[in-house]
Image (cartoon, rainbow, N blue to C red; front, top):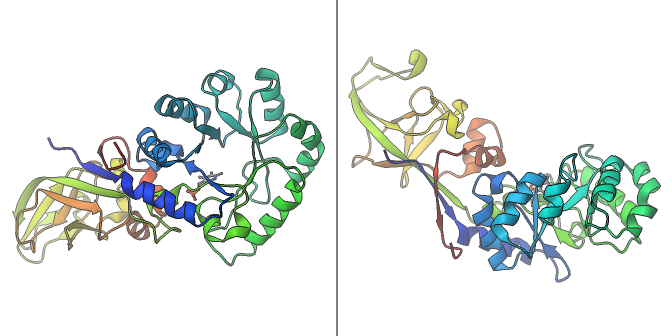
Length: 349
Ligand SMILES: *Cc1c(COP(=O)(O)O)cnc(C)c1O
């Protein structure tokens, strides 16, 4: 049976990375965040394409992700780990030459004891209260830590997707206060922070979602098209129902296509009876419930019998689908799951 196809445009990813890089000044390095398998699109392939375009700093969530990325990238590019150094990580951090972004006094102690002399960065909490040393902890440890030569001091903005939010300047001031006169490269901004302007760029920026042309980098090129094969088409009469719980009843005779993907593939059940699939530029409404592996679609109005219908593409982005599902583009992309045939275009792949 034909598998659903997730088409990934590596040229678009590279173009987005370059566009974000152009938003920052000459002294600012643009990294690439490829955690969660590059937001579901395939960390190895995406990172290799970006390394080919000149990216030198990659970020992942955990040491395990870092180990896998090192195997895909080979030696050379820096791979930093947001989760820092957790118990049991020393072997993979040392073996894959990862740079943990240490986020507590315990992690600092563990790293210095298990991998003395190995590179590390420091994550500071500037108000998000998620990861990083608190100001008082940093003030107590800074002397020893700075002597050991961290590669990076970083923090993360909580509200960067809201440009006028007072949390942004508050966190920036706090970050400046904690890091001034250290002489160590600094990083505060993900995609949203890059768009806040040069005051937020410091020496390194860390875009993730923007690489795929999703909000808040809405001017970016869309990197994905998701094409679902039609397994079966049937004609139903007025009064017949479609799908679980009979939530759709036909008022006239119609043609129903069944496509091969469902909520187990990240196509949320909340899309039931609300979202559309597309044949090119023509919308086709979902009929009734999205089930685990299948979705039923109205194709009565199409000029020719569809073999595939697009869930993501030119007419419907991950952000559009997210708006219908009541979530964000990040969750749509990272939820896409393992059952798609991922097909890469461009990027030297
Ligand atoms: C996920 C993440 C990023 C990337 O964020 P985007 O909004 O996807 O650009 C950057 N920094 C940290 C600490 C993150 O957790």
